Image 1 (spheres, rainbow, N blue to C red):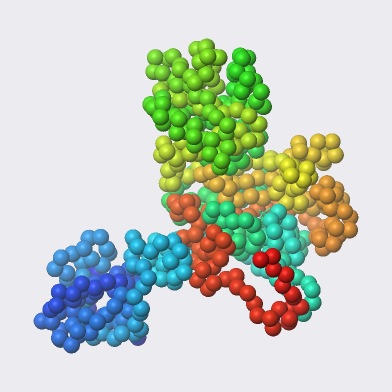
Image 2 (image 1 turned 30 degrees about the vertical axis):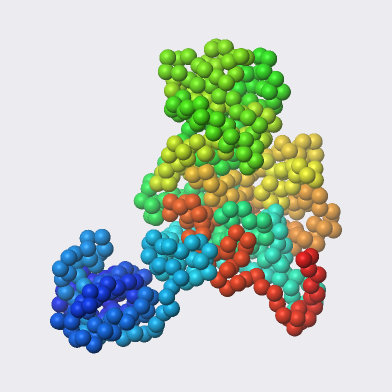
Length: 584
Ligand code: ASP
């Protein structure tokens, strides 16, 4: 028996018990005649004491030779500590060791395995198995387990069935590049790894499964933006014989359950916002509504004077920064530089100070009088003491820029409290999105999303205006889930694919299996998928998903621990009928 108890278990009530513990040496303190060792396992830390007077000299020597991260087993007696440590649950006791066995030695670890480590990100990724021994990472993985358990509990209770779908498939249309896998048995042919189980879950609905979910890996070969992983996990769900309202209720229920069970937070019914309103009020389809600072569109009250910059802009739009009138000229100049950074891309920023006496002082006083500025304050909801920041230009660009400024200012003002949860539904997304480069429309969600009733005719005349039965679940400024009501008849699906630029043959080659299935009694259906990694990170109050993934990849999509991806040898290439044609 390696242990009678774990390292987080023993308390004052166990004093005098004879125990056996196993674990890792976190650190030791050697006073010559007495040695203390912190013994760690997943459950906690227990202090061991080796004392010349109470045990043997031999044992002390053995203890003195223990290095960090040695794996040991000890037998001993639980005794009361002379100086208690109120910071750990086992802090009232220690183990007076009578027998020590080294189960395995360890090299000196490349960084300290403590909550606050001296190891940088790269080295911790390389030795991830050591990093996992540290509390912050270990706790994050345990937290993730708790979330996934609650997901399974809730959905199972609601009658959802977890079904696995294959990984070796054919391209799925989530808009990213596929990872492909060469097939040895089918020369010159490739599987694609699923970007999501989208088509399979729809086929499960045709198959009558009625309510499906799966906690599933998805693979997208995208250029990695910060905090994205090439493989990530979804809670993927689909339901049959439902309308949009049923889906919203079902998954609002799941999210509320998680917030309650995992975070102990009760939230009101989730607000719902139309996509168009989210863009207008927050410049963003995933607005953070933990704080206000809503956009005020100023065209009507700013385009009547001689200020060419505003007059020539498609949109003039501002926000009120609470307490912003306290900013010095220098602070504001810094803010202007911030919005002009290439990542944000604004050409400049106009501001108006709202003085306590109700007067205004703006950077464009030459053009605008007090009455004009009072209107700006009114439209943006600015109060005395605030600062109105105004950007102008192309509608889409300027909204994105002001949204970035809004988030940045809120961060600086401490308005993005990770303990506050503000979920909402954003609904009625456009069905299609114009690709500025190619001039072609592509599906904003995916090609199986159904247009809003009665809008299919608009596809020909005004495709950009067609709205979809598509919805996103947003939490604290992050899209944590998204889905849609699907097309479930072959005719509509064919029209949709035609508008996405698929010829009949291409549509048949790529999605023929789904279109065929639609001819055998496909029920009305719809669903959504949550991004589990992000959801867990937000519930855990963290910005980055990496700590919640046991073995994450770095920013170049590499696993630096196992050193993947890696070349394969010639024999394997031959077996797969592959020849390399490297660009460099
Ligand atoms: N397959 C979609 C996605 O990965 C989710 C859905 O429509 O259910 O975003």
